[in-house]
Image 1 (cartoon, rainbow, N blue to C red):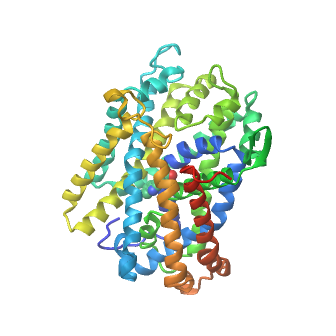
Image 2: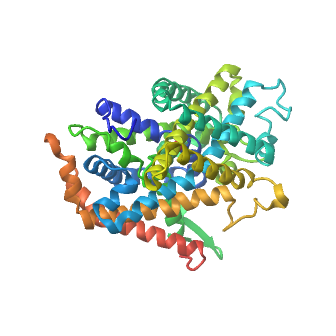
Image 3: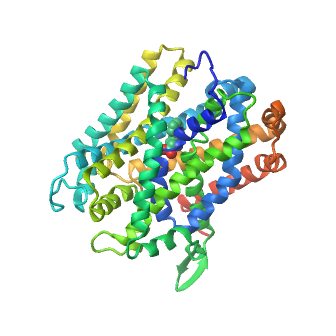
Length: 480
Ligand code: TRP
């Protein structure tokens, strides 16, 4: 999609598919299951749904409408509308710049599994077998391996950009994404029929309010901080997964036709994205109960879940399934394709923002961006190893470098961006600016009253309370 000519999507379906393809990626398959496992299963899912139906939907509608109305890229758009708000575009670009390097590192982890399954040894006890308990930790703690695979994933994304085949991979994805979807359903179906999986399904789907209670001195009491932490995690996940609060949907909206219905498109995109996330969860969380790691119970495995959950759980499932090599290999190849489209699209948007802002040539902006990614890849790849005497694995605020940046982008910068967007649209432009855009060409905006209320009051107040509580509790200033 060339910016200069500002062509339109082929129609509403084209728009929905393209937006869903951008939304579906590692966020759904890798990040959603481990966060849900970590934050109490059903209760996290409930919070996630409530956010999706309220703030998420209204923000997505806003971004798409803003893009279609102004036909500008986010970096310039805000400043052109109101000069003093150009910082919002910069904040959005900064979020992508924080996410992209670690997205590439996780893409490298997927690539490692593609290789491992392509050359899989016979015996599980072999260290090169992905179902070997030590496989994942050996891999991420090996500096040259993790750098090598992240570098390869980066090279693949860069190659697509340089060859300008973005449209080609988007077309390819129309076949690959449904294939991934059906394969994931089949795996989830198998997992859910295993003994003990029911415990995992319950954990995943049934909200348990007790998760918000903590025990101090033998008495249990409701913890507001715990509630806020869960909400922040769910909200960050929603932004990440729907590619919100980073200007992506503004750009996508700028290519949308005036006659298309923005409100309906929002619900369709959210539906596609969420269904994939739910299936990924059904594939991984019950598997942690049915096939827990040696020496752990299912509940221990999920409550200690971290970024490795997908990588550690699935190989055990595949071994139990005695799945043919072709199936396991295709699964990771399909996940790789989903990750690649997302990283290519993120790189492309970042590149064009830099190009427009600095008035550089495409070649120069791609080169500078590549240098930035290659440098940033180093601490992200080495943060689980002892390389350089453990310099990169030093924990900051109790987190490794990768988790720290993930937290910074999703739990701090994105809520800040979303808060600022609400103030900008709700109070400076006024909700009618967006409502009028949605209602052009005879479309009606069914939720317009709710929209105004959410964008002016509910969303900004809610986000501010949650964010402030989390930051203060993170800094150990309050504990309620
Ligand atoms: N939503 C994508 C995912 O779930 C990740 C993502 C965030 C993204 N921002 C993006 C993808 C921008 C493409 C463009 O994995």
